[in-house]
Length: 262
Image (cartoon, rainbow, N blue to C red; front, side, top):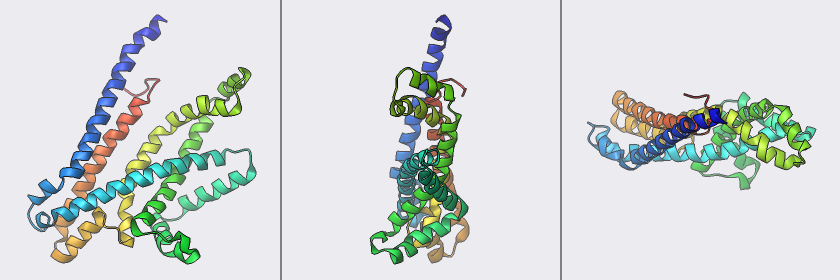
């Protein structure tokens, strides 16, 4: 008991630091989205006179990442549960979904959702942003599914057997014991997938979404100055990924109950 009490201040301090880092990085991201046009406007042409276009593209990039990221986590949970299900049909459906999404290029998936799905059914016609979000979510969901499945398989079976021996139902055993542990195990690859999704969102420009890459391409087409345009685009991506990496690291540390991260 004394050893556990001695660890409590350290764990509490770590959680406080991670929470402070998460809040600070989130505020920094909001400030970037709100005020990014100000420093861009002070840059030389062709960046300065197209600052608002770059700012709008940056906001669309983050919106795509957040929407596809949240939906991708939900899809990953569903697919992972299907992959470890006792029912062969669910295992087969989840396996095919993961196999197709991981085995085909993301660019092809974006084009398929936008151009091919409307030919299959008019109900599957999406606008540019929605089509990009659907394709990105389906893609990252497959990778999330494998991470969550690995987390589920990593939970010791003895804990589930002990829970059942105590009278817990299969549902309560999963919700209260198995899934929380599996999610913590899967958390590092999940947050890495979200950060990678930010960069993958650049493929949305192929169907006309005016995100950051598309904004830079438009400025380059009108100014014929590729070097400053794409340097500015790369710097904005680097800034966004840096802030999101700080948020993801803070999330990992916040849920590091065992204190494995220092």
